[in-house]
Structures are given as structure tokens and as C-alpha cells.
Amino acid sequence: MKQKDIAMFIVIGVISAIVSVVASNFFFTPDSVKQQEAEKVDAISAQFDVPPTDSKYFNKDSINPTKLIQIGEDPNASPFNGISQ
Image (tube, rainbow, N blue to C red; front, side, top):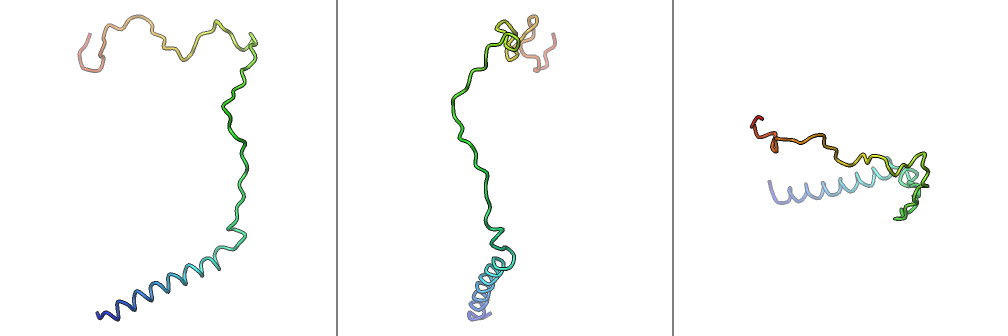
């Protein structure tokens, strides 16, 4: 190939890319599709309202479900290393 042929391929490629971008914006995406509206969201604040202390729903003597409960003592400190009891 000659140097003129390579330059001609590059020029044709650039021109065809520009034409395809312009044509796709003109034909395939009309102006009504390009604009979108988003719903507005309220700002998040760090303030937390404390719930009322109704004894029907909130019991100060109830069990904490997030606390680890252990029944009995575990004699095997490393159960997965293959040593049996």
C-alpha cells in the first residue's frame, strides 16, 4: 500500500464516523427523548425522633435480641481443626 492509500482510508473513516454520529442524533433520538425529569428527594437529616415509651410496645426489661446467648460452656476451643473431644 502506498502512503496516499493509508491517508485516504483514515480520512474516509473520520468522515464516516462524523456523518454517522450526526445522522444518529438527528434520526434516532428526537428532542423529546433527550430531556428527562427526575423526582425531587427530601434531604436526609441526622435527627432521630425517639419513639414514645409506651409499655405495651417497649418493655425496658425485655431480652435484647442482638446479644449473644451462650448455653453451657464449650469445652472445645477450636472445633474445626480436626481434634475430637
